[in-house]
Image (cartoon, rainbow, N blue to C red; front, side, top):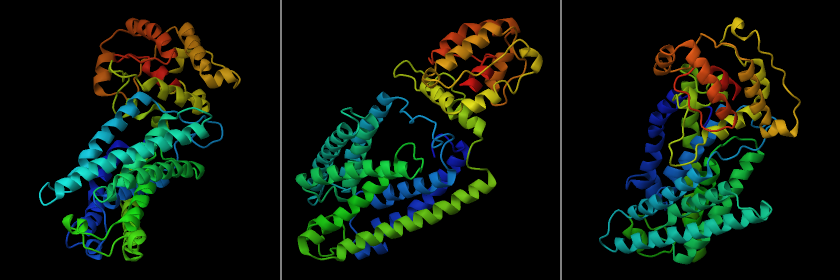
Amino acid sequence: MAERVKLHAYSVFSFLNTIVYCFPAHWVFSSDGWLHRLGMVDVAGGGPVHLLGAVTGLVATVMLRPRLGRYDGNSEQTRMACPTNALLGMFMLWWGWLGFNCGSTLGVSKYRWKLAARSAVSTTNSTTGGGLVALLVSYLTKHGKIDVSMFINGVLGSLVAITPFCALATPWQGLGLGAVGGLVSIAGVELLEKLKIDDPVGCVGVHGFSAVWGLIAAGLFTRDDDTLSTLGFVPSGGGLLYTGNFQLLGVQLLGIVVISAWTASMTFVFLKVIDLTIGLRVSPEHERLGADAVMHGLLDTEDGLLPSAFGSRRKSCALHHEKTLWEHPLEQCSDAAYDNTELTPPPKTESFRRGSFLRNTLSHVVRRRESTCGTMPSYWSPGLRAQAGSRGRTQRNADFVSQSTEIGRFSSLRVNGLRQTQDVTLYL
């Protein structure tokens, strides 16, 4: 849903999605749940949490359709805006996952502290296996290079895979399950890319495919001992590879199908109602400008701590949507203000794809600009309008010229409510 859903529509759906979650959570975790009574094994929420979230994301991204220019044959591969921030987020999830899985034993008494310790070891080993597999796959498929996105997907996929089985897995099982989980998540992301299903953050591959593998693994490797009853599960004869009994594996597969079907149907209903009432997708103009500027007024996202991702987002938008940018560069401004401005798009050469066209265009506009437009964009916040209105025309024009070189280098945009956001935002 990222980069193309309306914020208020997403907020409404986030609230409604709690209804979708409550039913599978009761089926699996409650002692009265029908899947629980059948003997389904899911220690920390591989089904009600991760599989449910992945199916929700799949239905949503299919309904929203791909981002503009994503699969038009001319656009470049979408690049990660800030690998540093992405890796930081991965490590935060990694650390939090230990508490999530260990805490799912629901106590430390009656042998549970040993199960919590086992969860910590199996979770750590799982990420080791998933991370190593991701590094190997990246090295082999990316011509000796390490792809940050693939590494993150591998680690997170291994965490999802061990979640249903964390307190029951031995250290070696954790390592193996994580390795397969990382591989499955990477394959899932690549499969959706081949099918042209636009999943910007890899939600379906990481949380969906890996959760299915983790739930199946529980049906294969669960031992028939007292551990199940200690965790509150109904004994079902153990996994297929230890007992030769298909019962637990069948229950796990039934849970996968039922949770997926329930989630897909309810998600479709809720999103359809939202789409018919307040609308789901942002307008094409707002999608090109980006949610940071349109929905949040964040024209400068640099916090001084981590690299700004705003510049690369603007550059990518310019590369993908050059036709529309030329058709509507100054649509909200009066014609009289731009009588002396002539723009002729250059040929689409290699330098154009690298972005030098955008820098040259901005430089040309600044040199030819004699005045500024008196109107303010409709998407400006009241604060921006008030600040821009308090500045004189001459000062705004001077600030426009002084800031344009910095913008042309795709560095952080520092606007302070100035008039130039009309030109710069539309061109970028």
